[in-house]
Image 1 (cartoon, helix red, strand yellow):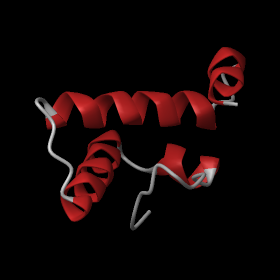
Image 2 (cartoon, one colour):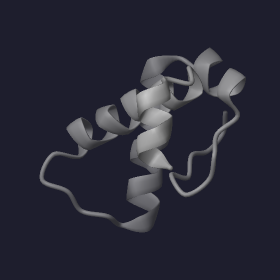
Image 3 (cartoon, one colour):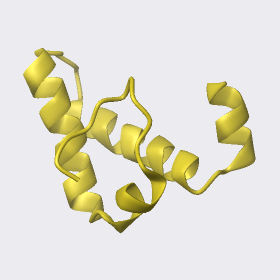
Image 4 (cartoon, helix red, strand yellow):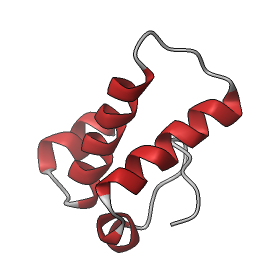
Length: 67
């Protein structure tokens, strides 16, 4: 993966094959490009990664919640 945008669906297989550290960096990079300031940017990125992983694994409750 080369970029991340929370407003676009990720390709599940590609996302899951990406190293977790790289996933976190992709999310952090998006935030920096958009100049989004957060009290704890690292925690925010980790939570995004957890949610994206659950969506990619088709965790039913997470998919329904997002819908």
